[in-house]
Image 1 (cartoon, rainbow, N blue to C red):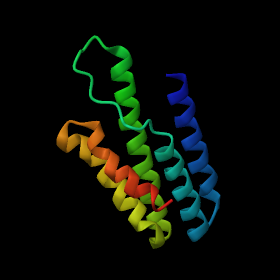
Image 2 (cartoon, helix red, strand yellow; image 1 turned 90 degrees about the vertical axis):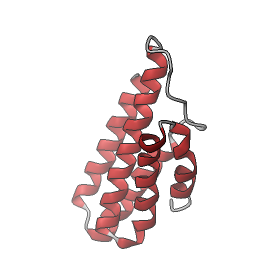
Image 3 (cartoon, rainbow, N blue to C red; image 1 turned 120 degrees about the vertical axis):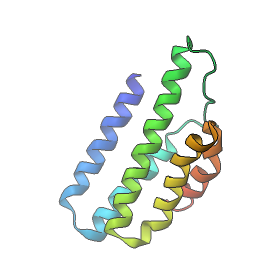
Amino acid sequence: MKKAAAAAVLVVLLACSACSSGGSAKGSEDARAACAVLQGLPRPLPEVPTDSADRAGQAAADSVMNRLGAARELADAAALADSAHQALADAAEKAQAAPVRTFSYRSADPYITEALKHC
């Protein structure tokens, strides 16, 4: 839990540090932050816990979804600032959406790999 909270704080700080930059520079900083979040994900991703009493498994799963969401938001911000980051944003969106469609976090792995190619 402490690592997840620290990572979330780091993402927010990186995103906020980009606020004072202009256009392309801000896009590059947001893209770097999105990539840092994606690189910090455990690989392979954990599966959805089947035991509702598995608190550690649920915490890990929640962390994955939160990180995928953060990466997507940062990648979207990067693409808005600089269209050169659109491929990263597209892959991050697919990575976040895959587990929702398939009920398997591991279905996001190919999209994470694709997103990381744009880092």
